[in-house]
Amino acid sequence: MNERGEQSLLNVQGLTKTFAIRRGLAVTRFHAVDQASLVMQTDRSEIVALAGESGSGKTTLARMVLGMISPSAGSITFRGRDVSKLTVREKRSWFMRQVQPVFQDPYAAFSPLKRVEQYLFTTAHNYRAERAGGTREAVDEALHAVGLSLQEIGGRYPSELSGGQLQRVAIARALITNPALLVADEPVSMLDASLRMSVVNLLKELREQQGVSVIYITHDLATAYYAADRISIMLRGWIVESGPVESVLGDPMHPYTRLLKQSVPEADPDKRWEGRTDLAMLEAEEYLMGGCKFAGRCPQVMDRCKEEAPENASVDGRAVRCWLYAS
Ligand SMILES: Nc1ncnc2c1ncn2[C@@H]1O[C@H](COP(=O)(O)OP(=O)(O)OP(=O)(O)O)[C@@H](O)[C@H]1O
Ligand code: SF4
Ligand SMILES: [Mg+2]
Image 1 (spheres, protein in one colour):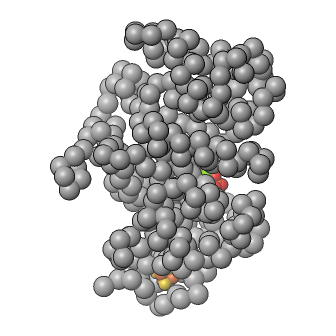
Image 2 (image 1 turned 60 degrees about the vertical axis):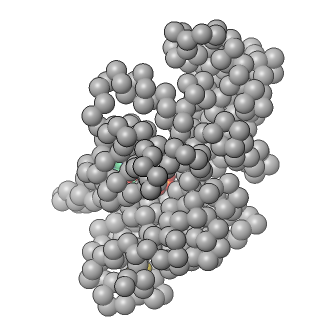
Image 3 (image 1 turned 30 degrees about the vertical axis):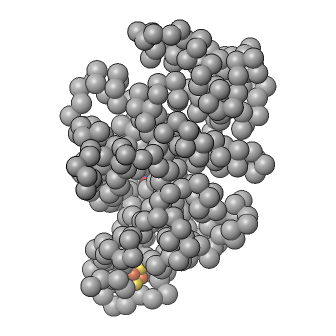
C-alpha cells in the first residue's frame, strides 16, 4: 500500500536468488540477486530503469519478476497478490497477461519460417478469444500502438523486417493482452544505433498514452536518463542506489554509480563498461566478497567496508547502500 492506502502495482521485497557454481572441486553458492526491493505504484505509470555492469543480476531479477524462475527468498506482490501463491490457472490467465516480457534479441523471438503476424494472431486468439471484438481488431490495435499496421507487416517474415520493426512487433505482441507492466530486458541493445531511440521513444509513448509501466533494463545510462522516471543501480546482486533518475544520474551519491557515469561517455551509447576493467575476473570475486561488494574498486573505501555489508540509507529522496551515508 502507498501513503494513500492504494495497492501497489508491483511490490518486490527482499528478493534473493541463490545459484550454485562449481569452482574446482568445490561448489560455491552466491546470491545473484541479494535482498532487492522495488515498488511500482498503480496511481501512475512509470518507467523504472535497472542499470549496472554485466553480471550484476539484472536479468535474474527480471526473470523472477516475470515468474520464469522462482526466488530463493523474498516476495513479489502484484496488485496486492503474492505471486508465489497464485494457482497455475491464475498465473496464466491473469498474471502473465498483466506482466509481459520484451527481450533483447527480437530475431530470437520469432521463427524465421513463420510470418510475423501469425504470432500476433495466435496471441490474440489465445488471450482475446472470450472477449468482445475479434482477433483482427486486437492485432490491429496493438500494431497501431507501436506505429505499425497489418498492411505494413502482413505476409512478411522476420528477415524482411528491420531489427527495430521486429522489436516493435514483439512489443505489439506483448500489448495484445493489455498488460499493466512490461519487463524489457535490454530491448534496444541489439538494434542499430539509429533505431534505438525510436524503440526507447515507443516505451515512453506507451507509458504516457496507454498507461503501461515499464521496467527498462539497460547498460546505457544515456537512454535510461532520457526515458526513465526512476532508476535502480545494481552491483553484484545488490541495488546500491535508487531514486529519481535526474538526481541519481545527475548527481550520483554511491561511488559505484559515479564510476558507471564516468565510464560511459553520455553521447556514445555504444561504449559499454565492459573492457574498461576486467569485469569477468572481478565478477566472481565481488559476488563472493564479504563486506561491501565494491570495496575492491572503491576510491573511498574504509576499513569498515571490507568487514561489514552496508545497509540502505535514505538520503535526499533516494536509497543509497554505502557506509559513507550511514547515520
Ligand atoms: N542459471 C544460473 N546458474 C548459475 N549462475 C547464474 C545463472 N544465471 C545467471 N547466473 C549468474 O548470475 C550473475 C548475474 O547474472 P545476470 O544474467 O542476472 O546478470 P546481468 O546483470 O543481466 O548481466 P548482463 O548485463 O550481462 O545481461 C552472473 O554472475 C551470472 O553468471
Ligand atoms: S561502503 Fe565503502 S567500499 Fe562500499 S561503496 Fe561505500 S565507501 Fe565504497
Ligand atoms: Mg542480462
